[in-house]
Each structure stands twice: as C-alpha cells, then as structure tokens.
Amino acid sequence: MVWLFDAHVHLSDPEYVGDMDLIINSMRKMKIKACAVSVDNVSSNNTLDLAQKSDLVLPFVGIHPEKAFDDLESNIGLIRKNSDRICGIGEIGLDKTYASSTEQFARQKMVFTKLLEEAEALKKPVSVHSRRTLDEIFQIIPSYRISGFLLHWFDGSKKQLNTATDLGCFVSYGPATVYSKDKQVLVSNTEKNRLLVETDGPVKFSHCFGMKAAHVSFIPSVVFCIAKIFGQTYDETVSLLEQNSTNYLGI
Image 1 (cartoon, rainbow, N blue to C red):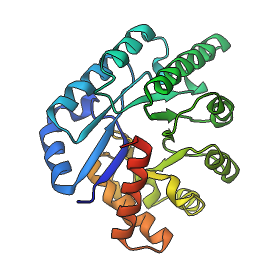
Image 2 (spheres, one colour):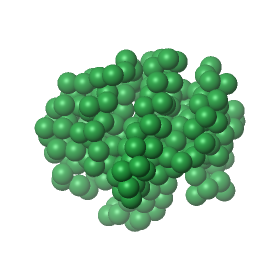
Image 3 (tube, rainbow, N blue to C red):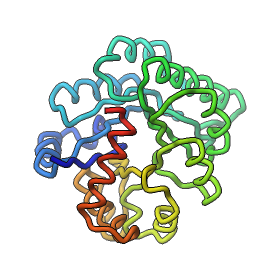
Image 4 (tube, rainbow, N blue to C red):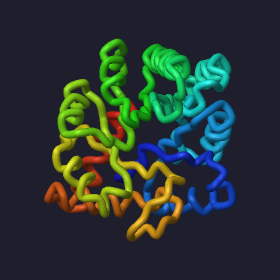
C-alpha cells in the first residue's frame, strides 16, 4: 500500500480542534500520513496527545524561532522522555523577523543548535524554518550528523537550492506550488530524491484554495502539480514521494 506524507503541518493548532475527527478520517481514506510539527511546549504536548489517537499522526516536538524564549529545558526533557514516541524534532530554526535585537537572534541560534544536538543524539529527523536565514543555517548544518534535514517551505534562490542539495537536505513545497510560477521553477530545479510535499496548515492559500486554512487533503493537488512539472504520472510521483518521505523519516 502506497502512502502520501504531509511533511509539515500544525495539527495541534487550535484551528483544527473541532475538525480533528474529520481530518483523521480523511487521512485514512486518502492514505495520507502527517508529520505533525509543534511550535512550543504546549503544542508539543498536544501533538503527542494527537499521536496517541491515530498512528497516522507522526509527532514532531520542538520550539519555533518565534517562540525562542519558551522553556528550552522543558522541551528537551519532553523530547528525551518521549524519544521512543516522537518521529522528529520541529519546527525549529531561525527567523530574523522575530528578532528585534542581536540578543534575541542569538537566543534563536542557541535554541536551534541545542535542539539539533538532541536530534543528532537521538537520530531523529528535523523540520527546519529558514525564512530569510538560509545562509546562516547552511553554516550550521555541517556541524551535525542528521540524515533527515528538511528545509520546509523552501523559498530560496536556485543557488541556495544547489547548496541545500550539496548539504544533503530535503526541501518541501506546498499548495502555493499549484499557482506560483516561481515555486514551479524551484520544483523543476530540485533533485527528485530530495523533494517532499507539505501543507503547513493551517496557513491559508489563495487562488483555487479560496483562502481556506490548509488541510492535509490539499496534498494530492500539490502532487498532481509536481507530476506535471516532472513529466510523470500521478502514481509515479506518489511512489517517488513515499520513498523520499521514508528516507527523510528514517523508517
């Protein structure tokens, strides 16, 4: 049985609370598993709770750069306590948008590198936020041995895409690929074995998605678009993405 994977979605977000049974049922019918990422300690605990309700929810625990001043030691403790249950660490990373001083950005870097250390020690993949900080992250990556290093919602240049590939990173693209020519160009330049798909729900997308909060059910639309870009059938693209996803997750 072939499965699709949403490589990055915030299922613990309050947006989904009332729809969770529907979401899980649709995931089962559509054969989609979800890498459910977290942003802080509260969402990390909620993500772990969701994973107990369904084996389709693959829990990731971490601290988003926007939440860099959350309790890091508590998050590390949660990771270690649940190391046999979590599938990865994320969403972690860097973002200068959320740093109004050099001290705040330094805090982001400290949190990011500490959580990378946990991922390396536990041999877990990571889901990384890299908005306008790709070059800084590229300098950090070689210091760690992490086989599943995902730059989610990749939005860099072709040169940065080549660097990400050289460093062994995976990159993921979401619903915007369906209507964004820039995203389609990036996909066309991405090594096939390094590509994943995501929704980053509950982010809202325009055009054909009508500014609705993204659900994992958006994933097939992204796959159809990528299949067209690669000149492959839908089924061929699903098989490719399943292999890439299992390689990323180490399963």
